[in-house]
Image (cartoon, rainbow, N blue to C red):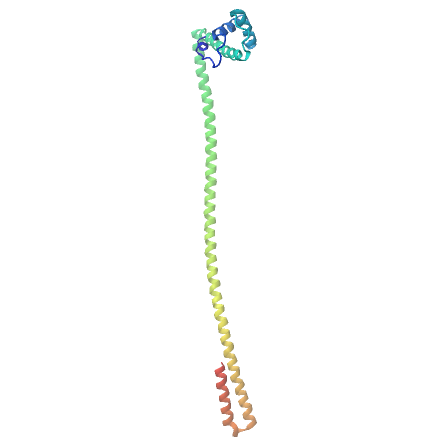
Length: 223
């Protein structure tokens, strides 16, 4: 009854009964053979009204809360009383048994924890191995990217060099074409001179030579 008397009453209008009265009614009902699970607010209200003259206007809802509290305290008090009634030898045996059971349970938990820890360590090691493999692969790919970039720069340099060489060759071809055209013009003049010499004879050679010389200088200026 100690825990029941120590409970603080709820706020609101004070009830017309006390917790001690409720506790006494419930204790008497249980002593008379009423199962605790069958005791409710209606049964307690009826006993309060008949035993203590409590007003029948008591609200079942608020009384049920008190009944639940008192039943819990009564069962707890009853359990404590039963445990205190055990012989000391039985209590010592129970303590020894519980100690052994506790150690067995603790050992089972420890073994399970060791297995879980081993599995976790294996999983972590696998993840670390995968991470190392991934990092190694990343370094390989980065090296390959660097190599390809270097090759690209080399190809760009070679392309620019070849383009410059091609431009030089085109310029030389243009120069050679001009020189070839100039030589063709000079050859045509020589052919013309020879033709004139054949037609006019030796007496006209100085005049033909002078004409060819003038044409040659004119062709050289055009070149």
